[in-house]
Length: 110
Image (cartoon, rainbow, N blue to C red; front, side, top):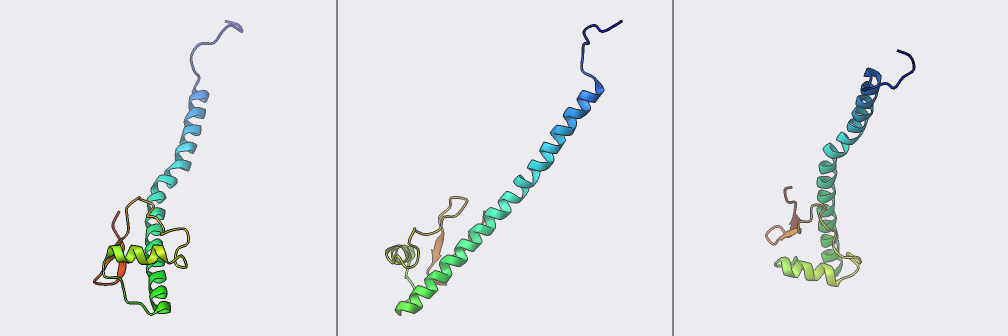
């Protein structure tokens, strides 16, 4: 047959492509699996930070706990010593809810 033009794809080429695709998939899967855990952990950390800052601010200024969500937002956003760059945002885009009965921001489900 000689050195003519080859047609088709050989087994080695197919195996090489499968190997490369498999490596890419193996590298991408952990990002998708663990990304939601990281976001949920960041949300819980934000709630803990907001509650700690609220408690510290109330104790330092001798204030009582806010009666509702509007008073809570007003308190933490007008006093720049608490959060000078604004309240932390939930990584899922949901607003944090203040519970007047407990006097704390509650963790929401994602």
